[in-house]
Image (cartoon, rainbow, N blue to C red):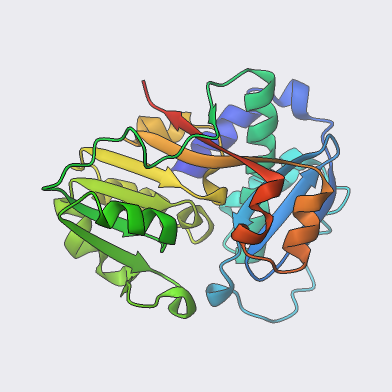
Length: 253
């Protein structure tokens, strides 16, 4: 599982990360944000459509907790814990990539310099609207799937992906699939695609487990400082706070 592999990569650096704590966090309508005490921020799509809105007395306190302990919650079946865990993994991943100088192309457009052809059939899982518009101008056919009924618009429910992904030439998968636990299945369904792109603020983790499963391009964000958390706390969509983050692209060699 991708989350298991991410946790193993993080645990290998535990000597350098063991003292990291969560200084701020916010679970909001659009995103969940976690800020470490060194300023790195991780984001995760909040799967509000799947969260049971009832009080859970046993949920731990996140503020002041050790980041590594919270990151392990990325495997939880409690979706709030899972979302906070993924956001924490993303914050830790950004710290690691900064410290180890991972080759990120900051400011790059994930839709440029990619192998999408006029005859291609494309699947987009998670309605990433800017990507959809560009892909429709590049490919023969673009199928769009969305899990959240409130965000779906003209997209198909994601329950139909099994019928389309295995035959598509290009697949774009939203990082929100980490939050709802569908990422491993979606990548398995996409293994025949010529190109797989993993994208969105939630896709901002260490790239190795994704590359090992056939992803060719990762489009994520690096975020630092409280302004991002403030924006998330105000339930702002990504377009409203993108000026506070740096978009980047990582390509598999």
